Length: 396
Image: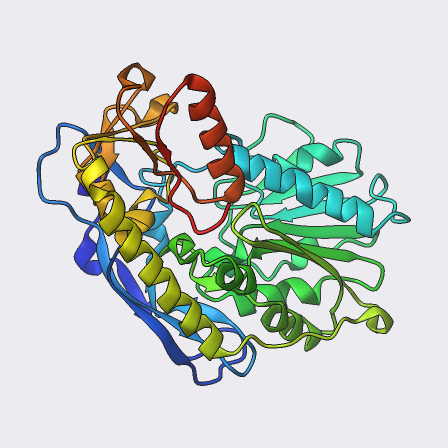
């Protein structure tokens, strides 16, 4: 997989201006030689590790938006050869979509979803749309849109290439997007185009990772090149308010990437006021996070050099950036057969199947991208009979 990528040309452009409000921004912290996630190579590949990009995290004190300075080329990262992520491939993603569906129902008890059009922007494999199988019209807009339901209408287009006008319908419509806008290099343009087609009686639902919960939970290991943007409650609210859409309801999901779920309507009377997180709070939290992992690595490395880990999830390289003992493991055990006999393009340990369990040695949980995943793995390993399990998180 790595041989199809020219890493010298992977940075598409550098941004210093806020993509939401176009204000000047500050560097919150630097991430030199930060690893790309989601890319694997054959276990036999003994060539030099690759996939490290100098990165910086920037923050806009005007609207509260957090974003990455260097934007990677999405046509490379999300090409058919390199992009392997789907909703059904992740229990965490499925749980998050299920919670989004509940949020939609709970916040709109009087809305007639059955007699409305449901349009999913970034619908991937149409998992969310399946919850609405009796609705009037189902539309999935995604470069990789797919489905096994014939009634779902697929539009395989990049969002930046659409003004969404063809998806404006005369009857009531619900527009929804799950974990999509954090990936977009110009999310404001897409959100504004989407806002233009939302009518008076329509609903807009969004969910994506939030900067507030990333800071609150000290989960800076969740930062990855693919997540260009981390919206704050204020940055997305102010952006859409300028287009006549008002934040009517929201909730945080502490278990999946600190997700924030939001409901927007044209009803200004129910508008919720928001505040901006100070830059100093982000910088303080990141420094404490660095200190925690430096101390943890020093404490546990003698247990795990040449040892075993569990979980070859997509975010392991970013955790290893802060906890380098992971790169000294002999192998990482995983239950996903598509990853077996591979390794990350930027890490050394081989990914092996569960036949490599060694119950006489401690095991390091290496896939902690979400609280839900970390808890599930710990319970699994405990039931299997491991005597010493290390779960390297500040809180879970």
